[in-house]
Amino acid sequence: MSNNFESAGHCTRCDWGAAPRRQTLKPGKVMLSVIAGALVASLTRPTHALNGNVAVLSCACQTTSQFSAAAIQASNDRGWGGTFQVVSTSGPSSALMTVRGRHLIDKNGNDYWLASGATPIDASGTSLAGQAESAQESFYGSFDQTTFGVSRSSPTVVKISDEYAASFVRSTEDEVSPGIGRALILMGIDQGSIPPGTVITVRFPDGTTAEYIKQSNFSTYQWIWNGTAHDKNGRQIYRDGTFVTNSNTGGAGDGHANVPGFGSGASWGFGVSAAPTCTFITTITVNGDSTDYMYVHPC
Amino acid sequence: MSLTRWGYLGLTLVLIAAGAAWLSFSPNDMKGQPSLAPAPPSPVQSVRSVAAPVASGVTPQSVPREKASLSYRREYKASQNYWALAHSLLPAAKAGDADAEFYLSKVLERCADENRMYFERKGRRLSLDEGLRYAVARHLSIETAQSVFDRCHEFQTEDAADLGSSATWLAAATDAGQPSAQATMAMKILLHDQMVNFARSGGVPDSGNLEAVGNGADPRQLLRSAVKSKDPEILFTIGEVQGLLHPAAADAKAAQLTWWLVACQRGLDCTVNAEWVQNSCAGNPACASANSPTELVRRLAGDQWPEVEERAQRLGTLLDTDQWDALDLGS
Image (cartoon, rainbow over all chains, first blue to last red):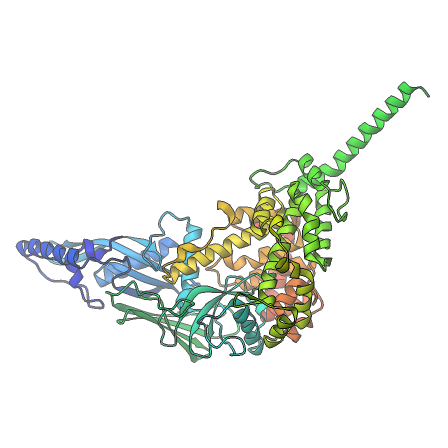
């Protein structure tokens, strides 16, 4: 899948976070620039759809068209296309949108970017276009929980005792699931009150962390791993401890979003920043105290 | 009385009996038929399947499907030996009895999960003594571990291949329009879809390895069909899937508890001994002290209780008046 850095050739030189370009180009230079840009683009063509910059922003969005409109607006404001992580302020929902468009020259010879559309994608860059709206919105809900490691409606981070598992690495669900139940009891949380599908983050004694998803209350296993785990330094790992390859080796990050939590009884806040080191940094604040920092999936 | 008169009388009695049977069976069967099931069995098929021989003899011959289903449910809940129960259900399941298919799938799944939880560790099978000690080490109930051993250990020691797989029986029961199977399958599909979403949203490269569930069935359609039974267990399951049906909604907990309250009020076992209460309490003494449906849901709801109570009243009205489209189960 191509992104707009390829189609826009010369924009591969764009500096993320920089103001939209407003430079005057002469027609000959424009042609030269396009040819040179195309050459650079072909040489540096990303092998991965998300192998480029990702900008973070927020909006009061829920539907695909709302996320799309916010991403297009941000793209036009910034003067470039690419991938935009849009975090909703009105519900626990986040979307990744890839914005397409083109660079145009206005009547004064100024180059400007005009976004023409946006497509929802997953974290591997695969398009969600063609899926039903309900399926897309389901993905946005899951992506939000994966981003923050918790549900923004009931953010829960548990520390599991080494009576159950000293590390996430090579742990098993018959160890971790009861350990989560026990940790929740000690925190005064009844796991029956947590709706199935809710994600919590489990912190192990050795500093590894993993996301677990609540199952049916009729299930023997009330919690199972959702596929996302990190070592103590925030690098994404598999269950055997080997690293998940960062498919996005070429991009930096830009932008920051502070978004609210939902539900009653607590004051929760969430922040996500796109760092230039190809990671996101997530902050969770409960009742005014920042209680956790997590590095999540590659940018 | 001549032979001819006896013949007429016999014929009349047969016709009356057939009419009475039709009148008594048809409404129940029709009521239990999910309108959205892909290929709902006819009432005749349903009755015939219920009448299929069951080795345990618990299910009476020629009873309405709902009664048969309740009979299977009681048997499932009362059983102390799932190995024997599974073999008693097998003939009826093989004969196409959707209720037997569903409860056989439940038995197989439950024993597989519970044996793994209590009597396996790192791929190694544990003896009873080892399993009990492992349960204690994890603060799990030793009584539960013993009960799992009593009910399920033969699934570890004997060849269970003739019983088939839980997934296959659940799919068969779902295809036959068995409401509990439909609700269970819907939940499995929604959880599976969410797991796929998590893998994709975490950028995990091998996310495509998750085994497909449901053979393309629409979970929302299954729920819309299952809810028409108004079975409290199904209402509970629909409560459980609220967060999955509406992942971007901020009030999944209140929605879940609303359905649970209605389910408990309509007869679901919500006391300390209920399977779901035991599972979800995880040994929490405070949790286990709840002994009435209202008390349990009220405690889980916390300060959302007034909202849950009000929503439950509205939901009850919608169910009683068959306003299926207003239940927000998706289209």
